[in-house]
Image (tube, rainbow, N blue to C red; front, side, top):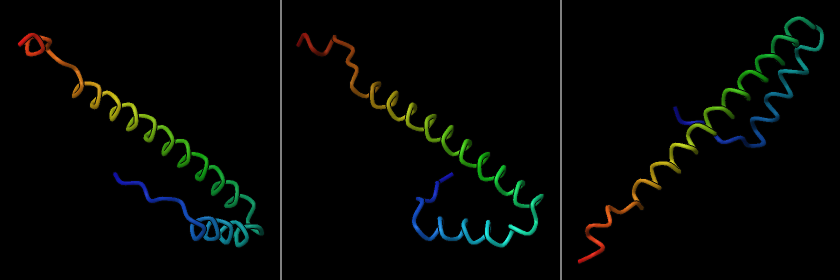
Length: 70
Protein backbone atom coordinates (compact mmCIF):
# COMPACT_ATOMS: atom_id res chain seq x y z
CA UNK A 1 0.00 0.00 0.00
CA UNK A 2 1.41 3.35 -1.00
CA UNK A 3 0.89 6.11 1.56
CA UNK A 4 -0.15 9.54 0.35
CA UNK A 5 2.17 12.30 1.50
CA UNK A 6 0.61 14.76 3.94
CA UNK A 7 0.15 18.21 2.50
CA UNK A 8 -1.62 21.38 3.56
CA UNK A 9 -4.76 20.29 1.67
CA UNK A 10 -5.05 17.21 3.90
CA UNK A 11 -4.67 19.30 7.05
CA UNK A 12 -7.32 21.79 5.89
CA UNK A 13 -9.70 18.97 4.99
CA UNK A 14 -9.31 17.33 8.41
CA UNK A 15 -9.90 20.67 10.14
CA UNK A 16 -13.05 21.27 8.06
CA UNK A 17 -14.39 17.88 9.10
CA UNK A 18 -13.67 18.71 12.74
CA UNK A 19 -15.49 22.04 12.41
CA UNK A 20 -18.54 20.34 10.90
CA UNK A 21 -18.64 17.77 13.69
CA UNK A 22 -18.49 20.31 16.54
CA UNK A 23 -22.26 20.03 17.11
CA UNK A 24 -22.04 16.21 17.10
CA UNK A 25 -19.72 15.39 20.03
CA UNK A 26 -20.09 11.61 19.63
CA UNK A 27 -19.18 11.76 15.95
CA UNK A 28 -16.34 14.16 16.67
CA UNK A 29 -14.96 11.77 19.29
CA UNK A 30 -15.18 8.88 16.86
CA UNK A 31 -13.45 10.93 14.17
CA UNK A 32 -10.65 11.88 16.57
CA UNK A 33 -10.20 8.23 17.57
CA UNK A 34 -10.16 7.22 13.93
CA UNK A 35 -7.47 9.82 13.18
CA UNK A 36 -5.36 8.52 16.07
CA UNK A 37 -5.76 4.90 14.97
CA UNK A 38 -4.88 5.69 11.35
CA UNK A 39 -1.86 7.73 12.41
CA UNK A 40 -0.63 4.90 14.63
CA UNK A 41 -1.13 2.35 11.86
CA UNK A 42 0.70 4.50 9.31
CA UNK A 43 3.59 5.08 11.70
CA UNK A 44 3.81 1.36 12.47
CA UNK A 45 3.81 0.45 8.75
CA UNK A 46 6.40 3.14 8.04
CA UNK A 47 8.74 1.75 10.71
CA UNK A 48 8.27 -1.79 9.40
CA UNK A 49 8.91 -0.68 5.82
CA UNK A 50 12.03 1.26 6.80
CA UNK A 51 13.42 -1.72 8.72
CA UNK A 52 12.87 -4.01 5.74
CA UNK A 53 14.62 -1.62 3.40
CA UNK A 54 17.66 -1.41 5.68
CA UNK A 55 17.83 -5.19 5.98
CA UNK A 56 17.55 -5.61 2.20
CA UNK A 57 20.37 -3.13 1.61
CA UNK A 58 22.54 -4.87 4.21
CA UNK A 59 22.09 -8.19 2.43
CA UNK A 60 23.21 -6.66 -0.85
CA UNK A 61 26.43 -5.32 0.68
CA UNK A 62 27.50 -8.57 2.33
CA UNK A 63 30.17 -10.59 0.61
CA UNK A 64 30.89 -14.32 0.68
CA UNK A 65 34.61 -13.46 1.13
CA UNK A 66 35.62 -16.27 -1.28
CA UNK A 67 35.59 -13.88 -4.20
CA UNK A 68 37.67 -11.36 -2.20
CA UNK A 69 40.69 -13.69 -2.15
CA UNK A 70 41.10 -13.84 -5.94
